[in-house]
Length: 214
Image (cartoon, rainbow, N blue to C red):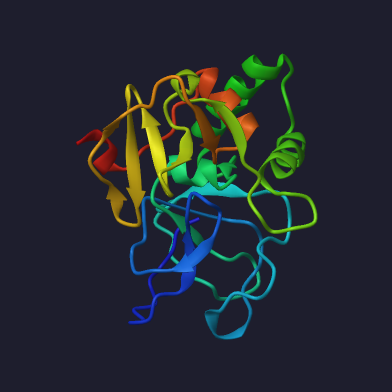
């Protein structure tokens, strides 16, 4: 699901945060994706934050195709710093433009639950795990910090952080900042939905922004 910048000096409201919020900021990120059609005229979001349960994370470049973002009535292009952010917000790999990653995700999901799921089954489970029913609010859960796999995002000290080895990396709109030691013997407020955490525990490796490796 490739994209083409409109060149507008005013950022569009299409950048997704680890909290699932969609905001207007200049930074783009490494991935795009969608939740269906949620924009209205003038490239603005309507009141809905999804139009179906298939929330996906896509590559920015697909066979050289280009399109102006938030135009037409096919989808609303959203952008993520990296795949860890997309997963925290509840987006799985796209089975079309990221076929190999999608298959790795299905394999990890299968290893975690013991049965191979359909895309629709995963989307149903993910929607139940990412949104508080009857609201648009992110559903968070609690797990021991020292037991979390790499790629999970947590809420710590009033900020989203990426879990990476023995550290946690503070999230900003343009990348991760200086690593902090992973808290020990503490319970985390986990942003990444439980089925995503299970897939990461089962071996799925999310693609991280370059600042996660500095």
